[in-house]
Image (cartoon, rainbow, N blue to C red; front, top):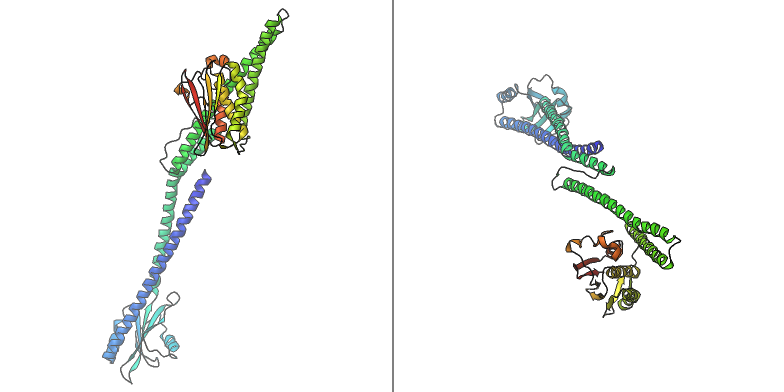
Amino acid sequence: MNKISIKLASYFIVTVLIMESLLMLYLHQTIVHSRIDEEFSQLVLKGSNHRDVLEDNFSDDTMRHIVLMENDSDRQVAITDEEFNLILGTDGNKLDLDTTLTSLSSRKFREDQIIQSNWKDEEFIASLHPYKVNEEHAGYIIMFKSTETLQFLVNKLNFHFKLAGIASLVSLCIVYLILSRFLTSPLIRMKEATEKLSRGDFNVKLPPQGKDELGELSNAIQKLGSDLERVKRDRTEFLASVSHELRTPLTYLSGYSKVAMRSELNDSERQKYLSIIDEESKRMTELVKNLFDLAKMDENSFTVSKQSFESQPFFSHIYNRMYPSFVLKGIQLELKCTENFIVNADPLRLEQIVMNLLDNALKYSPRGTTTILDIVHKNGKTVFFVIDQGIGMRESDFENIFEKLFRVEKSRSREYGGVGLGLSIVKELVEAHGGNISVESDLGKGSKFIVII
């Protein structure tokens, strides 16, 4: 889980840092450029004002007054003629005025402009302002401003931005710790819960996580634990039931075999015991066959291959196969299929469904009753009913009759036969067709099974 925490923190911190770095870079550049533009604007404005004053009142006193005004500030001023010969200027220790004027002497300027803008590498920035009083008095006012102030401002700004970056990093770490507690901690508990499930301990309890994705995952894990617990319980009960069902016929087989081998028995008694042995052998064969069918269904190793075929020939064939068994028991079997429509299903599996339902009716119906197989075509689907007049069942048993090894009359299982697997197989096969099965029944009056495919 530490890996998830580290990944989460890495993604979160890297994403926020990239966004924050871009934002801080933009703000830094904006502030610096704004401040520099302001300095340039002030320098140009100051030089323009001096030029206007000099043009309006040109005299030595005016020039001395201009120089005097800049003498105590971080700006300096130089007044030259048209050939850039210095007339008057402030005293600047750092300003190499002769070099600057020499570099400008070969050029002519007609308007105010910045002539030195490299504030990062130079000691001064400078602006030039041409003045002209008359043909004899013309030249330039050159304003200089030290870059120390700008560099100090930028350095201070850099410091504060670095401080803000460190504070942001610390804040992100705090946010990460909070996220680790409120996000990864539930994940750790869920991981521990899944480890308990893998060890076979399905009794997992997780604290409520709200209605977000973590809450849904927590509920899913708890539901999985409950389902696995139910499966484990059902498996135990199923194996116990199978063991009991197998033990009963085996006991009869073993016991009656020993009895049938007695030499003092006459033929009629021996035949009686051999009949019981034969009955129990068939019973065990049916159980093994049904268990094998269910095993194939659980492993999804069986397939449903749907075909299109006519309803009347198909159900008539099943009716003819089952009719003798009903006659032997004294039960009337009726087939109702007035419309010969096309059925879209797996004929082998559908036959298994119908015959299991009819066999169920045969086992639980007394002599002298009637069982009806009714087939209709409704809304493009095949709907058939198996209606008997047997023992019926309580409404509380409706949800359980399709469970493996469930029988309504367990205490009379030998009287009615069966091992409680037929209806569970029917349900699996119906659902494999994408259909559904339901039942209506009254205790002592019979049952009606409805299958829609």
